[in-house]
View 1 (cartoon, rainbow, N blue to C red):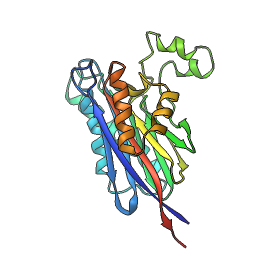
View 2: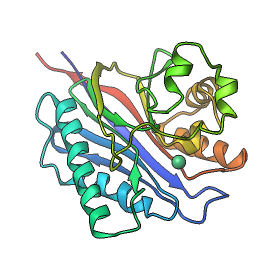
View 3: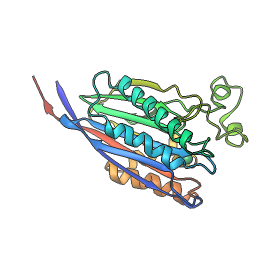
View 4: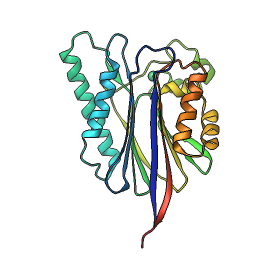
Length: 247
Ligand code: CA
């Protein structure tokens, strides 16, 4: 059986329009070549979105391990973060809107397990083809999915940024799943500060042009800044490679 290893790199930038960075991310190698990757994009006008995003990262980092199936363990961790954020809201009147997106993935033994709430994204690039694994939990998503609204109409709609669920909000029902990876596959986790400025075709082209995860992540963040840096932008890039075979 072929053994796969991962190289991963993450970075975040405040962007050019926001006074604070409320995105948080986690890139951590666990035992046995397992990796934990996560992006959380905090939100809430006067509320402290960064506290909500940090709570997601903290809860994930506190997990001693991710037993199989790791997708269910990740989803359970997001629900733990949800309870923790709601407790924070209870302690701090006036922070009622505090919440965050959360997109988390575990890479282990040739599989990626994931859990997701909100509009940060997980992409999988395999043999040159880029696929958005997660579905955005946006208020307009159903209208986009059934063709009632075009992506161009959605891009200028006043409710385009409204989420129908988030970690810490009244609705939090994590999606989760798993897929196989091959040597040479790439993973991208990002906040909407990237996808606000780059479409999937442009993201795929940037990934193909970059030699390694670090240069790919840096190129994507720079591209978002070059187009105005309208939001905090966070990118995690991972690339799998073969580390040999076992019986
Ligand atoms: Ca954002």
